[in-house]
Amino acid sequence: MNSESSAFEYREHPDHPGWHTWRLRDETRFNPVVMGDLLVRTEGDRCRLRMFPERRHTNLQDMIHGAVTLALIDISLFAAMRTLTDGDAGPAVTLELSTQFIGAGKVDEPLDAVVEVLRETGRLLFLRGEVVQRDHLVAGFTALVRKASRK
Image 1: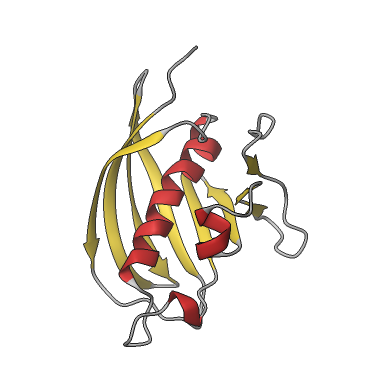
Image 2 (image 1 turned 90 degrees about the vertical axis):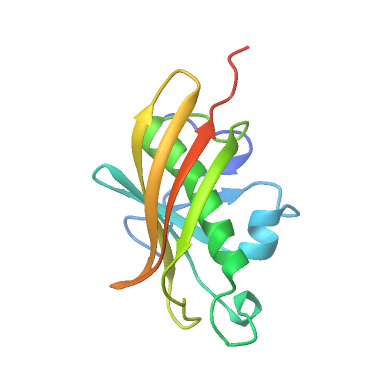
């Protein structure tokens, strides 16, 4: 991988072999404050972003809140951009995100967003993926991300 963006910490995680940290250096921003620790790894042509749900991530039914699932998906798009395309995820933006909620996420096990790049153009990245807990499908999604303009 190329050197990490100044906005992100991306390094091998000492407690999770085969995984890397996916963390904003500014710990006052959304990702670390709301989502907590995130891990990332590549699996062939896919990127897997993992979060560790806690009670604060649940709704009144004690399942993972839909907004948390959406946030994980959105963050996974940029992790995929960084790990699968070597793109600079920091200044990129989500243009479109279509999500289908399929099952409820549980708080007692890791929640993963698994993403693949369908196509990359000069300015755009087309992606799709699933949110899973082991073999349980929580959501499916497709997305369009605009890459940063070249200066």
